[in-house]
Image (cartoon, rainbow, N blue to C red; front, top):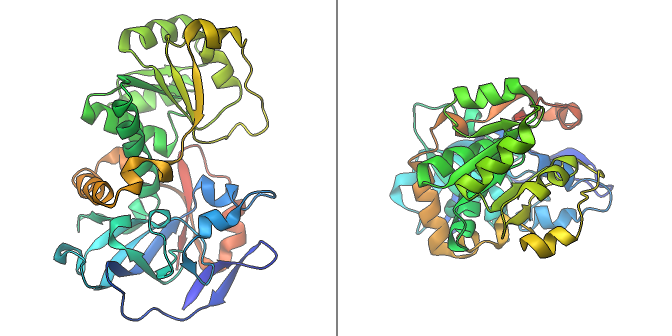
Length: 332
């Protein structure tokens, strides 16, 4: 079968690899309908990145974290409800030597790394969703357990930002979504997200400071870095923690007076969804996936497709610059 794999030079290449046959215990065979390219798929291919972390446990060095398709076989111990069903996949949650990655025609994945999709949905529309939805879900678990009442999302138009806003409202956690423009603000509000602020507004600083205090948003989910973080740090409530998840701002530094750390008791830490209790505990992971299956059909969790590419167009797909919140999608 065809698969997109990591070559010895660090580039992606199409290979013919053996098809998996009978899945081992706890695993599914999934005929892949589509797989999205996430920011992380590009990030781990940058010079200096530790690509092996993203590939851990995937046979044939098959690349990619996200996909969706239909289950064609199940191993011992897999719940009967998975047989023949459509699923969304977050491969990176399933580690081990039996895993066959999702950027292929047929994937072999632990069922706990999959969410059931309603038959009324197209799997292509959820081919990149689970990585974002699970990240948001696990993050909310972490901050609620730590005593936070609300969260500021610096990348409100990102797929994970949209998932955080929707899940926060469903779970009663206050969320302030930050976007760059009034048009993006109006778009999110039109989708039912209540607290959205545009950083381009002249009154942003005052509005954000007041809202953050009123809503108790002492957790920050940051996938951007750079200027937006530098701007909001002095405006955050006391006892806030900034959780760094991504770096879309690239080399743009974050800058603020260190005295703010002392006066406001600020904390800065890395967030990795793999290190959360939700991901590391098998029972909690299975429960989270079961819970997400009841809400995955929501419009804020849908993968927004910028453009579709065939496997043989992988170079063009990786070079494609999708609009904010949209993704390139690979179709076998």
